[in-house]
Length: 382
Figure 1: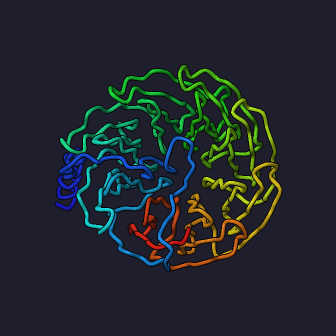
Figure 2 (figure 1 turned 90 degrees about the vertical axis):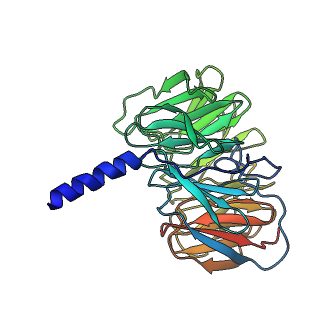
Figure 3 (figure 1 turned 30 degrees about the vertical axis):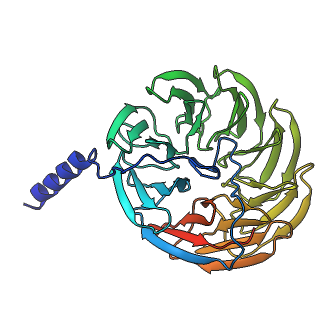
């Protein structure tokens, strides 16, 4: 009798996997300063426009129903969206935290979804895996492109989608139809050859790191290999591109700056594992590590300007807010640091570990915990 009940429950859960209760009453209208994809835009600048000069405070918190992977929340118009490890996209009112519904698109969504007006794109894992396009207003799946598991945040650029798989393939899809335009396979058959570094782009170059320790630069148009750089250890962190330079870190604690032609500008050793994206200010590259140290490196040559150990390991990346930078930690803290000195300006406790990067827009930033809670924090001085 117990087995029969379990079988019936499992069948019901599978039948519901395609069910939807996410239907928006209006089309999200993009605004300057919105955060429609991981790290804000194609270059992964992770920068928020100036915010009100007032003491920070938690404005609201809401349940996501499941934990999040490496992706950050995304923001368009008055809507906030998250992808969860239960395979759902969940939507909220940005200013109140009110739930607007959710839709199950796969077994798990590890990265950030992408919101392009009425369309949401998500990379999913499990059967059938691959990529999904969902209409937020008509509440329907527009297309689904099965494939290997994708455990990163995809990139949308010029109506094309870019992502990599745990099997070591990087691919480009037509965003309108899901048709595959090209595929690039990692050139050597390493035992660990997956791609978990979310791609960034500048001009016609799409850059990402891989488990084999290399950073790859591909033509966004054709998928041909433009260049590759060996960092010496697995690259999980997503690259950040600013002023024609690509910055990322690896598991052994190397921070690498490479120009968009593949020439190494500098390498700095911080001797601590890096898994999240850095934040590039006008003069510094700010890098959080799993040792709990945060480094301010001079962008021109990689010199260490300051080192801070505020409170706890940093797994996800950061967000820049003028002269401030924000990180979440695995010790259940949200930190606001002075970007020029590394001094802790403010911190608060949350209900769980923060494994993903924050996101933000005018007047508010969002941060999620592994206790299935999404927080909105307001009032960080720029």
